[in-house]
Image 1 (cartoon, rainbow, N blue to C red):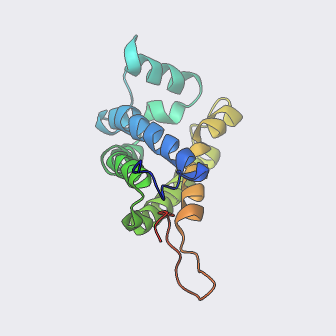
Image 2 (cartoon, helix red, strand yellow):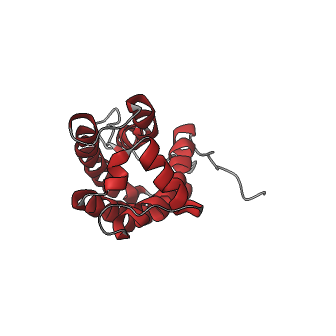
Length: 172
């Protein structure tokens, strides 16, 4: 007996979601935390993460340098609510925990709503990105990830109408 009888490997979509959850956990805790805690317009920084963030904003995405109050609040939610959630999601995916279904659906819905506002301001508000396609490319994963997570987490019905489990356990 090896102890691996009945073990079902992690699905490819769960692996992809895991990579994005871990990536977003770090960006939320690094970049969004800075934007949330920076009062008003961002001060120029010469080096480090702050320097990179300021360079990116002043070169391509002036809205993040302007850092209006609504963006500080949204960044705070991302840093201090979504950031920890990504870590919990990662653990739940690895451990195959069914309880993650509804928190993930709620997260994905809130994230998509906030991205509509964020991208709407980027598209129709001022200041606009200097290279819109590049900024859209950067933020696309923040729309695609919640859509993929919704697709994975929404309940599916089995042949008898029962809700199918999220994760195959190999038991039975």
